[in-house]
Image (cartoon, rainbow over all chains, first blue to last red; front, side):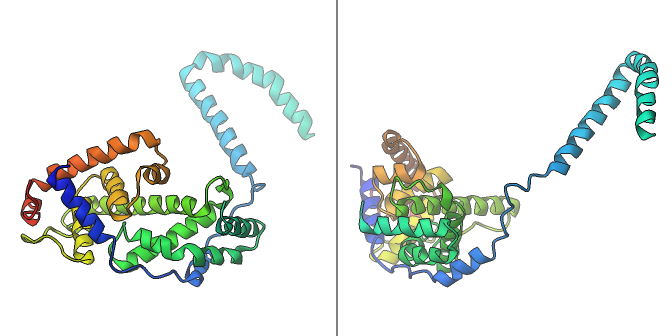
Length: 93
Length: 194
């Protein structure tokens, strides 16, 4: 073995002695654990956020489509006027 | 499996059943060993104790993930190793963010020294020298030199395949040797006949 690695092994053997670390105070660790934020319940699934993000994605896609394909909106507008709006009006009544 | 391991498992079952206070028994049993282990990651006793606390909190949070196929103390030692490693990483990040604030817990190499004759000066020299290596090499050699871990234990602690450990240790040692031949370490290690 080369002299450098031998010297490192000697150092390591010497370093293994010396002062030992003290035991930990369990109360200090338990205090930290007690201070942890309460875990979110599994059934607290953020339904509102999920639906909101979904609706936003659909709206964004519609805007992009309207900008990118004006011809598509020309077709869709009359269809919307004829089918969707009367349906909504009936539902509201 | 030893009685001590069975006792740990019984305590863990109680903690997982909602008896959080039972965890303090695990801290009592393994606190000293983990505190000692964290001295590898910082020579400052206050910092190493803080890291040991952090390791126990992480162990508590991940307790449901302990499968029980290895003794709890091995699982805990692995968590503590990664806690310490993250500490080094965060110190390095901070040192990068504030470039004029020199170094983390590594001391600047001192003037030419003689071969250390006592444990504390040997530890100081090893810590300082290893701190100059990249983190992964530092970690593997810290486990070997400061914690006295063999191939199997290094593999277990780092989650590596046992077969790659000797090569990684060898490469890290060679990097250390190259480093030691350059200033400022060359002067401090002048007692080693290269």
